[in-house]
Length: 263
Image (cartoon, rainbow, N blue to C red; front, side):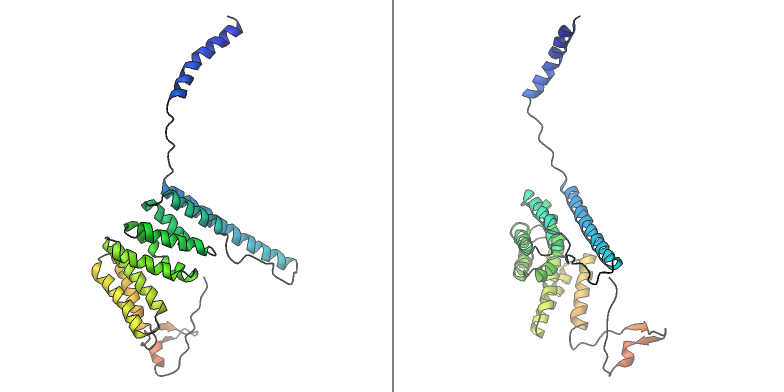
């Protein structure tokens, strides 16, 4: 059999299946698991921050070794914008579903100078997710985001909506505790502190979730024992000579407590 004839036969044998496949409807592309996408995004951000730190350390070390008088200028904030933008885009891909909540929480947790992104995330959580049990994943980050990004108004609106709309008792309790803590931080008088305590006590009365109950107990302890005018909780420790002492040993004297550490 000549080569041209053999080639023609092979072409005929293979053309049938190819033509049949071409006429079929291609399968829909599978969407990657949102949790896997989130973990990938978190790992990428952690790597970027680690690289940023290492570059800063190298720059300082090199400057010292060269005898330079000044430390080189180093970006004071890690490179987060790319990842915040990606998180918002991913939240948009899952708009209106619980899968969007972790990406919005990611924005609240990790944003640095991306103030508009934080406000957008808070508004989206309020508009689309206040009645969802999944929003509990974001509540832990709203107070910090509110203060850092001048978004207290958006935080208040979100917490009010969750308390009003959410049917999940534990999420509602968590929102009450969060609102109480927020009000406690900005309280200027006893009436405002009492309102904060009311939220937290209400939360403690409605949930049996141990973690949420502990949050309520910690917040109430701060209200009842750590406000200006309260008796300071006793502290038992050792002095620089290893001798035990208690804060109450110095009752009636002016005491300066200097809390510090390495983080």
